[in-house]
Image 1 (cartoon, rainbow, N blue to C red):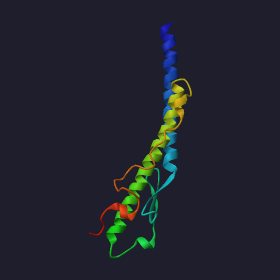
Image 2: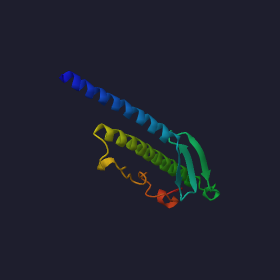
Image 3: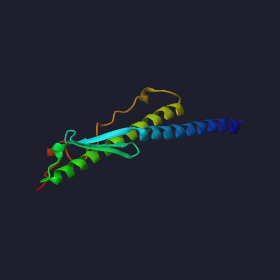
Image 4: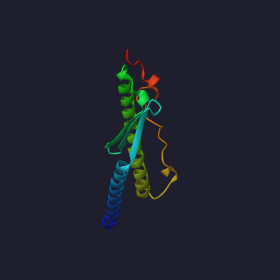
Length: 141
């Protein structure tokens, strides 16, 4: 009698875990298909990529190009890439968190007050202290 009850519960648990896996795969695919843009210098340099890190474009405002100070443009590109990487990581965490929240809510008996999405910080700090050219530190000596 006990083995029948526990096998039914185990079967339900396994079905829910398979559902969770399916939801995670779907969330990863959806996040991977989205396009994200990173920027630096107040938008002077922009880099675009999908959530799977397939780069789709770069935009550089001509005002950022100073042949006498190539280092500034290099720093702006690096800051834009870091901004993009942080946004992609945030996108992935949000997608996975939403999938996990929905699936785990089902595992533990339905929706509860903890089912609301968790607010993430706007962007991970890249250590540059800001997004403007002056916030990148000394450039060009």
